Image: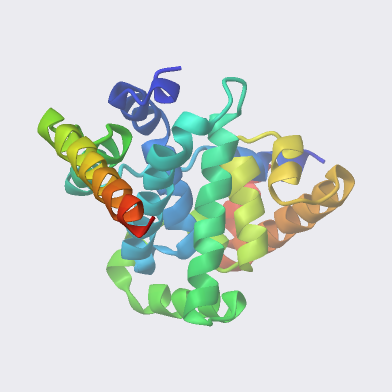
Length: 67
Length: 176
């Protein structure tokens, strides 16, 4: 079994291939963007809450007119 | 684990540690003539890490996870192209023979490796070149450890045969 072990040893000695620097840069930027969630401006939260309240008010007013 | 907290430094550490290793594995798996495919597969693998890395358990084997993702991406690409993997390998070998520059760049082992069936090549790369434990590889490939040992022994013999065929005297000297 000496020969096969030497074959694996030759494989282990194969040199490392570094990915192109430009690829690494683009990949890192894209990965970071996926990791860090987008920060939403507080105004959007207020706008969303206001639109929900407006809709609920309208729904309540509309329903109360039915009876 | 930084990655679990979605800290980009966790990604950077993983990329610094495994980026070149995975790229070497993928380049040899797809063949040097398909280097751009290796780049695509590397991107897919690490973007998947960015998406799913934060969900990984603290005791997960990140290296095994990355190789599994890379391998699955490769298999998906092969299926997508509707190429029989053996035919693809043979075509690539024909390209190498015609390309003097590529031949000069490749060592004997790498050339012999590129002539093997993709299943043998993958196994030898994972265990031999990447140094993954056979037990880990058997889990990755969903085969019994005993089956993996047999397949590995056969793949070694085929690689040795290819090496001998390419340069019989040099290989006998190197391995004696």
